[in-house]
Image (cartoon, rainbow, N blue to C red; front, side):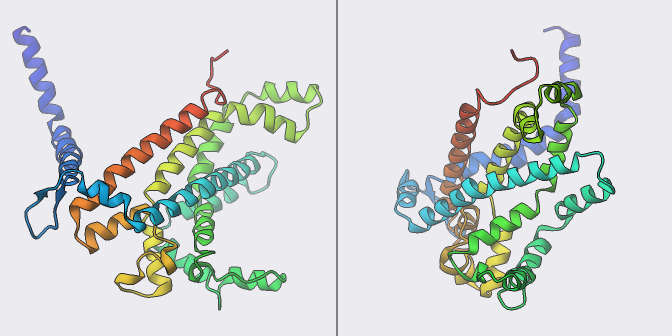
Length: 305
């Protein structure tokens, strides 16, 4: 390496040194530290003590781990596909040029995304309140049974799914961008062949925007595995405050992220919580790879034959 090359390398490293410091200080070091702590008994006030795989073995025998994993899987397998499907339907409707006030409708559907997450959760606590909530009053008005939502373990996760679907504005924006890239000529060719609206959506629109659908499924699943703020606010706001309240009635809202938070910042079991975090990383990695493998023959990328 010549002198000029070394000078250029040094200058480049100096220019990116702030980013390197932030990357290693805020991402790499905490990740490696949590990996080390996952093999220790660490309760903040005492020095970490090496225990090997004990934390991971204890997790497998922890009923709260399996409960949180079940709740998270329920939300991922049911809530994410529903949210992605609803967003696709909304995007298809908002992509119709003949609708009057289209920009207003697009703004309305995107508005929940810019609202603070805590405010959104509090709003839905009011909407789904069994006594004065607008949703329950509407159900009673049309003669349907009245669920107790967050106050009933059988309906709590359904309330969270409703909240998730309400905030699909960012997913709609991605679909609208993908829809702009569908060639108009393909629709015209389909019309010549006698295809109706459903046939055009099924055989033209969906295949051509399949990369966007896959992207939304993967990012939605990753976000659901880390679901925390809404469940924390709802479980606190509906049952009361205090240690036992976090997780909702019968731990029906104890999602994986909330369970991890409890162990880290309520029980102060940093080693155990670190092991939970690394298991979550492996679950997310395995789920993402599984989605990519399943979709490898169903997603069309431009230029493929």
